[in-house]
Each structure stands twice: as C-alpha cells, then as structure tokens.
Image (tube, rainbow, N blue to C red; front, top):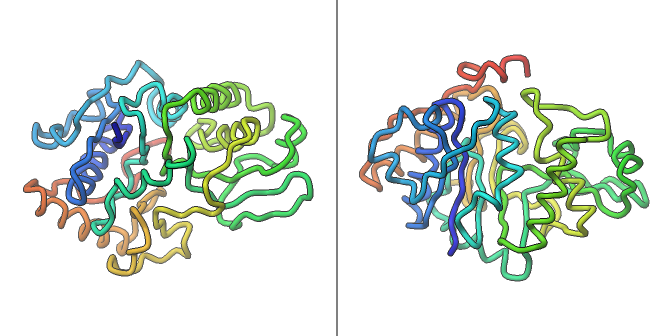
Length: 287
C-alpha cells in the first residue's frame, strides 16, 4: 500500500499545517495519509480535520521542538504503516494539478529518493551543488572524518520517497548513528543535528543516490530566487513549500489560494492561515 506520512508533534502550529496539507492532498487525490502526532500537535483540530488522517500514530515521548522531530525523522521507516511512503514536511501544500500517485512512480526502480541540491565529488573536489543550501558541516571535514569517496549529496528532507526494504532500514540505521555522533563541527537547527546532515553521509556510505541530481519536486521561494510567483506558474512542481521563519505577503497569499480552494473542494473550512514560524516557535527566533 502507498501512502503519505506527516509529523505533527510538540506544538499546535504543526498540527494546523498538517491539516491544511492533508486537505490539499485530498483535494488532488484520495490517498491514505498518516500522521505521527501527540495531543499537543493535534489539540486544535476538529473531528473533521482529524478524519483527514487514515491513521494517527502516537508519537513517543521525546524532547519538544526540532530535537524531537528530527529524532522521529530518523525513524520514518519504522513508523510508516505503508510499504511505499512519501514523507512530507507539514509546511507545504500539494499542487492542485498533480496527483500524489504520480510521485510514487519514481520508486519503480529504486527504494529511496529525496529532494536535493546536487553533490560534491569528493574524489575530484568538483562542486556540482546549486550553491543554494548547506551540507551542515564542511565537506572536507566530513570526507576526512568518515573516510568517504565519491559523491556527497546535499539533501533536503522536506520531500522523501522510500520503500520498506533492508537497504532503507540500513540507511536510516546508519543515519541515526551519525546523528548521535556527528564526528565533525556541525551546524544545528533549533539545537538539533538535522536529518539532512546524517542522510547526506549515510547515502554515501550505503552507496545510494537520489534518482536525479538537483531534483526539485517542490517550489520553495527561499531556494528558488526569493520570489513567490502566481500559483498557475507552479505547474511543474508536485508541491509548494512555505518553509522558513518568516512568511511574507506573497507567500501568505499563495497559501490562502491553494488551501482555500482545497477546503472548498473537500467540503471543509479553511481555518488556519499561514503564520511566520518565529511568531509561534521560540526555537526559531534566534535563527
């Protein structure tokens, strides 16, 4: 069975975003959606909004905020009830003209793929990244600390496809060990070592790669030039990301258009407009 997995823990902000994302997915296609959640995350949702989720998976007791969320992200294959999973950050909305089932076609000849900004060739030093994101640590230091060769990808964890398999189980096992003991001077987010940092290294160690270098399934204005174009110009993407600490006027407008249309199509009420994360999440105010 194929399905979509979200995380909504530690704060109602994540639950509100998860409900809006689930609504936008259901407006595009009726596909099962599961959410790893606690009561703090879902306490503001109505019965109709909770019913968007085919399964609510109780989250274990973990530290609040990104520390706990990143620990959950390091265990996605364990928690997913699906054989094939699309894991999405909740600060996204699904594009109304794309079907989630289309994305699963990318797993036809592999068990894992992930949005990424390209790679550095550790053997030649050639940099094939977009220069728009981070490895979270110096690639040379990573190479030396872990004895790596070949490609070090620069992943982003907002859009991940995986199939339950021994290879994927080992990938995440390796990544968890790296997250616990980074071995290098690593940049953190919300006092947390990111899943992206760990997956970058684990992919290399496992000999795995995304299906395409610089795969961009979701439009994110922070990455794509700082501009939010009209929604009708975003047809080349599966989803639209609204990540980052500050939600600008154009981002809020685009969010209202997509979420409002999804609410109308699904017969629900659009109750949670986009807000800046730093207004709600203390861990975001220093970044």
